[in-house]
Each structure stands twice: as C-alpha cells, then as structure tokens.
Image (cartoon, rainbow, N blue to C red; front, side):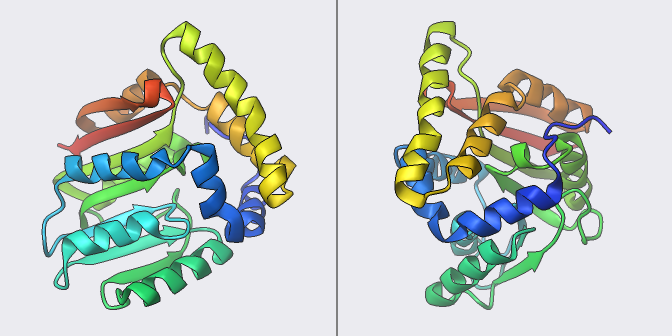
Length: 237
C-alpha cells in the first residue's frame, strides 16, 4: 500500500476528537473564511438535483453535508461519514438544529472501506479529508465503487500553488498556522500536523492522475486562491 499520510490512523482520529469543538472557528482562521466560498463554488459545479442520494465522506462537523441536504430536498438523502465520534456529535447537533434529521444519516466509519453497495450514489464528495487518510488512492477507488455510472465524485482539498513565487508565500503562511492555532485553541502540535499534511500531500496534477487511474474519467480540476485549494471532479464511466 502506497501511503499518502504516514501518521497512524488512531493518532489522526484522536487529533480530530481533540480539536472538534474548535475546528469550525480555526478553519475560518486558516482559510481566511474562504472555505465557505470554495464550497459554494463546488456546489454550483455539482448541480445536485432534488431526490438525489449522495454521500459526504470525512464530513467532519457536517457543514457540507447540510449544504447537500438542502439541495436534495425532502425526497433525497445524504449519508455523511466520518471516523471521529466527537466531530460527528457536533454534526448531529447541526443537523438537529437545521431540522434535517429526516434526510441526513450520520455514520462513524472508515473512508477506505465504505459500508455501502456498489453504484449506490449519484454523487460522492470529500472535503478537506483526503490528505488525512493513509491511502488516498484506496479512498478514491471506494468512491468510484459506490457512485453510480455517470455519477460524479468531487474532492475539495488544500493544494499547492503551481507558481513558484506564490508557493514561497504559501509555505510561509502555513508555518504561521500552528502559531495562530495555539492562540485560539492551544493545540499547536495538532495544527502543525494539519499544515504538514497540506504541504506533503499530492499536487493538483498528481491528484488528477490518481482520479484517472481509478477510473474517474473524464476528470478535471480547478484551483482556488492562487492554488491554496483545489476542486477535483471526476465521473464514473
């Protein structure tokens, strides 16, 4: 197995449990609030239809899951999966407050071994989670397996600017992220891990190649904020 994240799964799970209650606020700080805009742009691209059945992997505290739930409507359904019990507990509260308990099912599980049948979903998404799994290719293979023929797989993830000058500023900014986290959450080491996974993860072109390898074709990607994040879209043949 070719590892894209060498940190043991249990350590990553414990990390997200620890930072769960500060995750949303820190996410706003790290991305300067732009992750919401990136998600909005992604939703426009996906064109989710009423009555669709979709899957949101590494759903975290559930924000993207709720966006999807609004789109599928009362006759559609969203399955939202994450390995962190504490993150899912926050997602559960958000779903209840939004009155979406009838159309969102939260599941604690492993993105590399999905508990779903083949060809089950019209759309499968993963937001800022692929860099945290041990084997990104295996997750994409699972996403390809459970999406329907001609269905769409979408990955919104931190990325690396392709311009060398911008890349230098990007690298400098991510060195500051753990310091910012310590001021807000007192979890320096945890957010140091997050900036390291962003720096060490696949480039946008490498991830595009992985989409093609697992049979998500045609595939393409779009960069956000000078390459600090990327949206990859692939379709099942």
